[in-house]
Length: 280
Ligand SMILES: [Zn+2]
Ligand SMILES: [Zn+2]
Image (cartoon, rainbow, N blue to C red; front, side, top):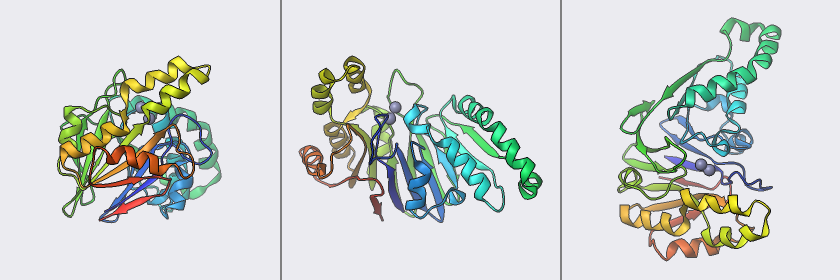
């Protein structure tokens, strides 16, 4: 299994970090978890062009996690020789969001269908949307996936994925504070991928920006670096992979983040930049 951090950013724009998105590859399947800003550029850089994407899994419907899903849908469609349906798995509400995307894309779809005989013969963009909840299980090829409840309230429902193949387990958490659902998902995992914030930096930056009060609100519903490390220790995971850096890590700043996590977790700790991968 190979896990690549395609984008380690957040809603805050960054010149170096793409939006939140992680690629899990196993059993010749290419599973995209979330689809943030510039995901298609990072897919190419990771050697996985959109037509190769087997399925998209969404942890929640916050804009930073879905902002370029439309680009994945369109590019996969127009670059594929055979228009196979793209399975999209996400929490309740995903159908409504995807219907909106398809409405947005309908004029473009019409132009391309009018222009290209083979696309017309294949019958337009095809998606298979599955709304899933904690407790559900499904498979992408030989890769088993179970769905777990996370806590990102007031955003709800939010979910994480425990992905297993060939005895290797990866837990992909999305945005959440530590909670029972998260602990169950991460139990004894080889890899635990957690979106994190630096509470100390958020608190020191907030007074300096006009939207400071709103910026402080993000502390309510994300794991801090320390909390992610504590969850990793509590659940006996082998490797902690941090992503979704708020604020973006300055070049060369990874060591400080690493040290903060290492105070609470003695296993391997992996911290971006974009396109960093782990493999087992
Ligand atoms: Zn987020
Ligand atoms: Zn979120």
